[in-house]
Amino acid sequence: MIAAPGAHGIAITSETRPGPSSVTSGRRGESRTRPARTGRATSARMAALMDARVTSDPADELKALEVRLRGHVGRAIADFGMIGDGDRVMVCVSGGKDSYTLLEVLRLLQRRAPVDFELVAVHLDQKQPGYPADVLPTYLERSGIRHVILEQDTYSVVQRVLPEGKTQCGLCSRLRRGRLYAWAAANGITKIALGHHRDDLVETLFLNLFHGGKLGAMPPKLRSEDGRHVVIRPLAYAPEAEIARYAELRDFPIIPCNLCGSQADLERVAIKRMLRDWEQAHPGRVENIFAALRNVDPARLADPELFDFASLAQES
Image: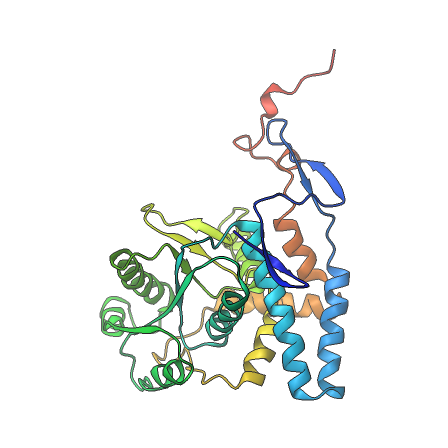
């Protein structure tokens, strides 16, 4: 398993590193050690990083961002056991800022890692009108990145199945995922890496809370429903603002995600706006919400499947 980058790059470890404080999870008496977390320190570092844009050379700013993103990804890989020796990692590249950043940071870590793992960038051309078919292959070839470009006309399927004006993102995503997963199964892929970041995880928490009546977000690592794939999200600790700035400084050739003409996911847009307003009024709030996803206390919720409330009794 790859651990977070240290002074000498990446360390390999299988040990659990306890933090400064210990809490009881409430999960039928189990306890686990967790570090104390707060969003203030992270928010302060983010502010300093953004202020550096005014005073620093772009090359220095890019280097600092690269170090931070490498740290975010390295810690996520270590914390969740995302990548191990001999893994074949398929990086799903959409042409957006998140997947470009994920691919480049994983390449940086691969050079420093004491374990061997393969990376292959895979992109699906879904045949949307106006799709710039040469953009990604040109970038990947010039960068010397092993890649595969798949083709499947999911656009026509979505247009035929959904009524006009209905948001197409959900169905489009499912069709894309099916094609990519099929390729992974046929080519010995052991891990599928997606570009979701910290803000995506927090937004999903509120989407489920407001519209689904449940507490749940995007897990940093999961097994697919059919059990055939392990999906990882190495950018789980990375704030979107850092990714956006990194992509801007790297001048990635971005492919827009609105070629189909579909209306954006308005519910997610509203959540994103809410979180942005909160962060402006209360810096560090989003980081604290994310910290809560890693610090769950089932004994202080109300789900009897997670905590054995029925067996609680007075101590004799």
